Length: 254
Ligand SMILES: Nc1ncnc2c1ncn2[C@@H]1O[C@H](COP(=O)(O)OP(=O)(O)OP(=O)(O)O)[C@@H](O)[C@H]1O
Ligand SMILES: [Mg+2]
Image (cartoon, protein in one colour):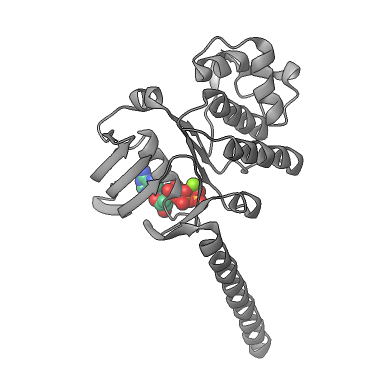
């Protein structure tokens, strides 16, 4: 289980402190698939980075399996079982896809096993295992390779930041099946997915809404999902009314 207790994260912006995450309390229980959603810029990726240890909180503590990991490094947290897939993955010049998957897995994977992970994210593995993880890979390919490495890690907690970003519809369908399978066969682990996608929200056990640096609401999919649709519909109506008003004003000004 992962627990965030009163987590805050402040950055320095033009000499002034800007609070991106404000006093967040959040729990990711074992054997659950949790989806974090909410508007752009709300603080979701920052939360994921705080969990993985890429950023350090300016307030509060983080516990993993009951242990305080707030001062633990990225590597230590990875060793303890936290796997993390970036929203925008990084390239590694000089490293082959196969090496990357093997490093992530931390065990002696043969080529066929490594290929399985690539297939599951919709990549024709034979074409990719020996490719270098450099700029020649497309954004979508890179993103899928990154997801494959986290799948290979079989971590106690797997964090995926917008796995849908830049991924085509066909591969995305595959990916949903992979996540669903992960959820159905989950044992002592948990999955945290940051997403805006309805299909991913649909397979969540729990949904957490993060907005303006705070957890706006958290609950079961049954509780939260209908409120998201209502919110989105209200927003669409407001935007639509706004456009009509603007068009009327423009028309009136002529
Ligand atoms: N190092 C930083 N310095 C200044 N501002 C930052 C920094 N990191 C994040 N921010 C700001 O904090 C806010 C939250 O960013 P974050 O990337 O966590 O949002 P998000 O919820 O993941 O959004 P999206 O849905 O667009 O991915 C944004 O307004 C962002 O510009
Ligand atoms: Mg983000």
